[in-house]
Amino acid sequence: MFGNRLMGFFSKDMGIDLGTANTLVCLVGEGIVLSEPSVVAVKRGTNKVMVIDKDGNLAVGNVAKEMLGKTPGNIQAIRPMRDGVITDFEITRAMLEYFIRKVHGGRGWVSPRIVIAVPSGITAVEKQAVIDSGLRAGARKVFLIEEPMAAGIGVGLPVMEPVGNMIVDIGGGTTEVAVISLGGLVTRQSVRVAGDDFDEAIVNYMKRTYNLLIGPRTAEAIKIEVGSAAALDKELTREVKGRDLIAGLPRRTTVTSEEIREALSEPVQVILNAIKQCLETTEPELASDLIDRGIVLAGGGALLRGVDRVIAKETGLNVRIAEDPLTAVARGTGAVLEELDAVKDVLEGSDEE
Image (cartoon, rainbow, N blue to C red; front, side, top):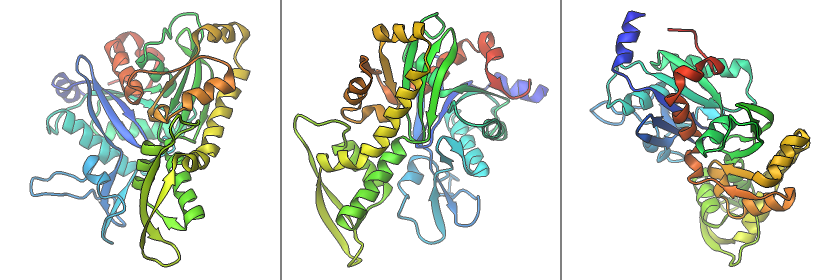
């Protein structure tokens, strides 16, 4: 115990957005210091992370993402998070340990306190898995905060005041919808449909419409370059390369933003339904606040063209995209770190040191 406290003295406490697609780390006074894909390359059939050079560097994050879809038979690039929860405990632990050490300049004896954002809809077992992963990765204390609360804090909403604040956080694995007041989630919806499902919808559309098989990285690039939820003033086109499912040979074709909008319509509708369900269960006094305050969008999915206009049309409320929506949750965990001793009693966490 004394050793942990001593190592903690030399450690930097960290706020972590442990996302399905990306992991971001925030330090007090420094802001976002790390943002890398939640991807790890392992030897197939094992939990052993690949070493990529003689210095012992591991295939985690950016390096591992470059391997997706390109690995030989004995190597597998995987994402140990799915729908916002851990699907592989050991690999998640290794990934967290790598990120913790990287933030601390490669030192392996650090023992920080960490605040991790988790989806509001996960189970107690899933929460415990996150806590255990953090502890086994080297943290001396792990606190959990629900993602919509972290996002609300990160975008600067007055979450502790007696007014209704609505946040919609469209991440990689989940979409978190919540109305926040007096430091708590008054109503909330958590659906496991988000950015990854946008990518999957594009893969399926290309397969169904063009008999063309593309990978997740190509689908993500299509989403970013020509994807939209609403009609554009000037529609876009993009060349797509993949493998012909009939001939089995490489082939290219061109898709339009109208086609990709059609492909994305189903997951977008699921998110719209979640927002409306959350509004339907909101108390009248808080609902009246939302007429003036509107809805704030965070997360990478908020960058999908026109998604704010579609939500505004469906709800009749003003909708704005947060500044730097990708980092909102991570910035929220960092803000909590600044007041950790004052607020840790209301956070879920591991046993005391």
